[in-house]
Amino acid sequence: MVDQVLDAQGLVCPLPVLEAKKALAKMAAGATLKIIATDPAAKGDFEVFCRNTGHELLEASQDGPIYSFRIRRAP
Amino acid sequence: MSNGLFILLCSGEHEKVQMAAMMASVAAVSERPVEVFVSMNALLAFANGLDPAERYHGGEFSELLRAKDAPDAISLLQRGKEFGDLKIWACSMALDVQGWEMSHLEKDLFDGPAGLTKFLSDAENGQLITL
Image (tube, rainbow over all chains, first blue to last red; front, top):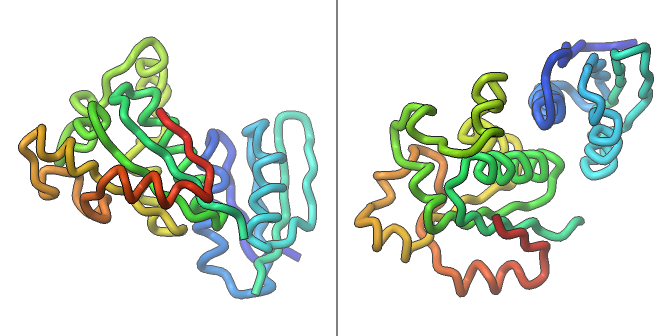
């Protein structure tokens, strides 16, 4: 289940992470954010971002040039 | 808890200002404390009220950054401050040499003037990057 979708297609580093941070800041603990991105660096960046912030990276997938992530907001 | 990131920004070259802003904002929103010390030519890039064409001077990549509408360095730093622990200091020596007060700098970005001694001391237990 996804509570919010962030379309980060076309955004280049570091904007996908910055926009995700902004979106997560407004969400309740436990809510899920889906991010769609085209930045090839996004996978590594979101893995580290979640590790450092305590948010849970539920899914990281790729379909051609499109990367999708689901992040559960930490308490 | 990760150790702090300390960025000593001396160059006014657009590419270096941009990289400093990118590193600072990403580290800050990833919940790593960040401090940026702005000195020498870099201070000039943060003059209050400048148009981007006047603010940023660089080489080939600077032109590409502008042509491709890359995120503005000032904007990146503002986001880093809004969503993370990011402090930006103006070198007191550079302010003095330039004859500037803090009010000459971009509004709501700097946390005050600072000296190198304190900055380097604070950086001892963190990661220091110089641009």
